[in-house]
Length: 271
Image (tube, rainbow, N blue to C red):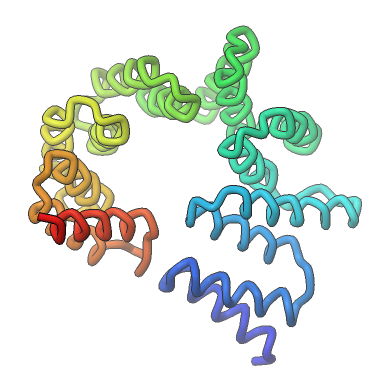
């Protein structure tokens, strides 16, 4: 392979098996040898999102969009817009986020992921009428795609959760569970929501235990169990579940789980 081809191969390998810091090193080489390309800047943006360095993510996602503007070309997919939109949202740049979505509507009309983000933004801005319009359109498209009622309810819960409206989010997650009480994915969604918001941790344990009875070796469910145990102060048990989750991951690295493991190890060291 050429030098550039080898770097691309290393970049793909790093995405699945290495840390974000190693990914950044390869992306820097891509920039050096391949020049400024949208996918390289997108890679930087996604990696800094993973590291929760959202201002840096904004910078690189904007660089990606600048190239498409320079080429007078539509971005390759709607995620080019929504990734930058999420980064804007997490840095409180709501005006830029709205302007971005208005432009995205022209390139990707009727995109469910775009409607999702527009609904989150409208709810965050407390614009109920606008939010309802986006949500109605979102539901309609999901129904056309034969998404189950429980699946739609989970997505609505995610919308309200992303907008920080936890009472409504919980309401939708519980409605989904009432429709499909044996759905291990729904059980995990509600259990993880309770963990994230430090709510009803004992119930969260019960929910994730049931999910694990239905699907015992799912790495995400093991991680959720570990995270809930961490909230209960059961650090040794938490570490056992998180490390098992780590071993069963389809990828060799997940930064969120890595951070959870480090937090548990720190808590154990402090005891």
